[in-house]
Image (tube, rainbow, N blue to C red; front, side, top):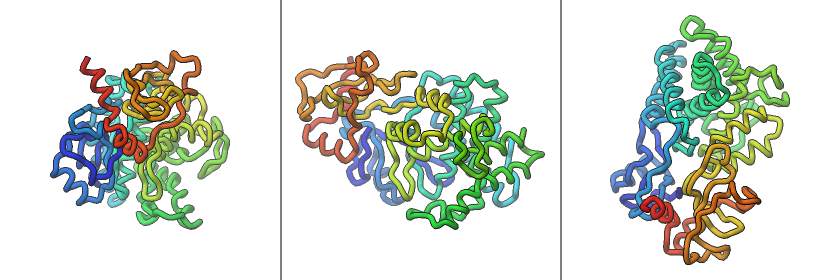
Length: 384
């Protein structure tokens, strides 16, 4: 997968990530072929870059299947958008519609549980909250399934995740989309959203099921296991088990999303931050379970390894740190006479063989120098 400036897109390239508008509708669905009209519209709405499966329009590789259907995701974003609008304007929401969204997400995850979580979408800055809430719900439902929760608990967890950021309707949009450092007062307003979200949920006691649980998710998803979170400084088992799950999903999606103040981190960088930098923030067992089911190196990622340059061919559950790769160039970046498929999980040094993920700007230069797009090696493999 390669992130390209819109001006460098070519007719026929396959979109690797969907792009959503502010109502949750899709400007461009992943798996679509780029057309001149799409390029024109992307420039018009101000999308700077798009992820494609290959820089060569002749290699029309489809992106890997995700844990939910694209139609499920789009429908969910639309309903979350409407729900947040209803709460802001009328103090109520269509609980039945939200429970249906939860059911659909859980249905997809159960039916498609053979799929790893992949990078999925691009969001306009002013619509981040709605698509983010859906992604958090999907990731939370996945973790709930892995924890072998009952269907009733899965429904509550997923619904709570959809509503976890409800308190942001009380936070100024200017603050939510600010691309410079927040003042102390602005940060205090941001930190008020968990309590405000819980208050909104309690106010809908006659519409929503188990509001005490849903409110706990909204209130506690920024608490840390070591007690250094907010708003109440809870720690360990003082934090609701569902909130511990939503906390992981929330941070992962935030890290891997583009925001006004930062570029999106790649999954491997998010993994390193959550696992090795933010020590004490998350439940360690849940975190391990989560990353065993997330594509840390998604299919199509270009890696520099101790053997040379390679493209990720396959990711498997429980082996997300050690994907199967296709080696195509030596350490000096020169193409080798014959590609070699290597299962890093079977190598004695495993994940330690990976030196780095080749960044998009370096990859574009690399492809130009080689006069070949590495994604063709996946294409050739599939053709045989």
